[in-house]
Image (cartoon, rainbow, N blue to C red):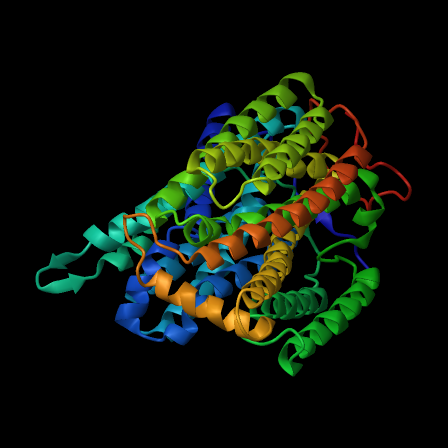
Length: 537
């Protein structure tokens, strides 16, 4: 068999670095924004397109397709170059956005959101890998911190921006009526097209493209099937279908079978989509585990904070959104600061540990909040949580990239992103199941019937509340408020356990100074066994 060969690697000029970085930041912002801006527009979308029963799929399909494609895009970037992957990803994202705006039914919208997700997966993994190609590890951390700031800004401005366009964006073009919610998707187009032009015209080839390599079709198909089954099981379990239903158990069985088959294929594949040898590298495996656990704890609580504020504390929807903004401020501050300090000193572990400790303190403070807690106390706790999350946003990918040969930059970056997204999904599902069971038990303790009857009461109250959210303080039954306070305390306690496990994983990460220079692949080698995986300059 002929060994894959590499094209020559050319060092990018400062102008190419600046323009490429700007284009990457734009695409990342749009991809992150698209996960939050749609939420506030969905009630209007459902009212116009009907299909309320399909409501969850608009979000689920984007998360599903983007997550499934992350490892595949990462490997393709290593084989065929990062530039072509970024161009393809932006193109699909633009096409999906345009088609979403043209949707005439919920089925069409869901299908086109899937196209968006496929492109979004390329943007996430491609952006981090491009930064890995542009800058050496020491300098890379500064720009990774910038990425964390971009995510924070997108999360903060997304919901109000979606609400603004939905309420005030209706436009008539010569008698053609364009509903406001459609601009939520159209707003992606100008910036995405501009970034596409910048990448085509100014982005260098960067990664050393390999010729003669074959795509791991079997591995790609198996990981797509396994992850899709897992994501659907976690998304549907306890909501669409009971956890013990044949549908959910069947999906878990498909995941298990697909995962085992994937491992068997990857052991012998010449160009595996996710090289198993990476997990023998201590820096990579511990960093990936820490990213999984931090993603799990973060999404496991942040998903349910707004509901707790509105139903547990009786806070209006607008104020509940404002209470979460301090978390984004804390994330932006600590992400940028950690990135700059690591770039200056070359040491990352202290900032990762400090972030985990801040996260423990913030979640611990939230656990002590009672029914009568002030919104300012919640905002303070959220700010500390954001400070803890910042280093995780900016450093995990940098450390993972520094742990493996540069010829596998794409698969290393995509694996880190992949397991972080899986952790977020697992955390949302597990914590949601815990919240539901505790709420049902608390409600049944104050009324007739068992937990099932209590859950039915809660769902009725929640539905009536959602239809009456306004600008004034929401009047919530004291029983519901007490149930939410008690149940959220259990959620915070569970999150503390997960963060402690994440802190242990961070402590186990080898403490090695980041390289100041690139090491270019000639040729790509598999990771060595039994090493910490740090490639020295």
